[in-house]
Length: 355
Image (cartoon, rainbow, N blue to C red; front, side):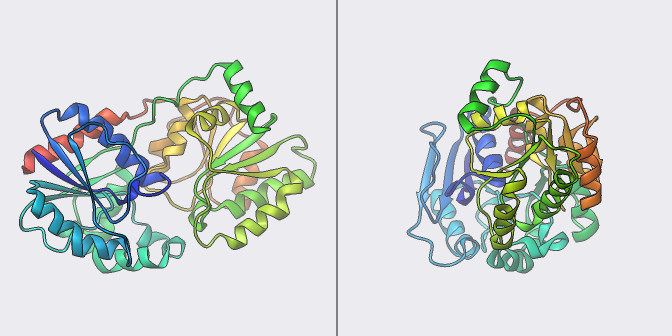
């Protein structure tokens, strides 16, 4: 079998969709030992190929939106390579797909639910093509049942399968001495709350910071810090100004941290806090709980899937978060965490059915 993949999410610092694509790719290499994979991107990738059966096709330098490149160029390259199935990792399909079948992965409906949080080019690409492309895809896979339910209600498209994210092997129970060593290297002291995510509006970090600072000012959590780990995002100028102002009250932005450091941060946290307005699944909540962190999260169906039973679910308001920080859970959530092998097997079933 010859499988084409939109690999653009792997061309920069690996975030949510990029992590999802990369981990499933690694599992696919074991699940499909006789397949060849063709990765299409307008820019070089920052990851190593899983094996010699993975072929990278970089077409020049991206000058326009990566979605325009996908529409104009990726499909032509896939036809030249004779792929049988094309995996649209970012939902949007190439313009002409008559030569191969298509699997579209839907990660969220952010363009409908929280459009003001999206970069301009991404928002308009989704407004132009999202609904049309999921309707014409040969198979649609979502990353959560919550996303599947929203897709059916808001776009009228039934999902063919759900492939929930797993967690990387580095995340799991951490030895206390290893946690202490990593926290020391990062200059972190206990106790602290931890938030993780790209610094952008949908993550609702201003409400979390306001809730935390108000408790610090009132003397109710005098010794706690609030640590925020994540890369710079978009529309973040106001938020970074707020972070600078809140630093004197114990708020600290760590920027991007490695998975190994992140595992230690999860394990040492008084609680992991996920205050997002909206998520398609919420991989950090799953990572935090397998590392042993109590979890506070916005009350969304998708985050209930990720965080598991025993997390504290609250409204994404200053008051809701304030109450949760004052009385956080003391134990990590329970329940089985999905794994990447299961997610990859879902994709294999779709690829084989269509090919």
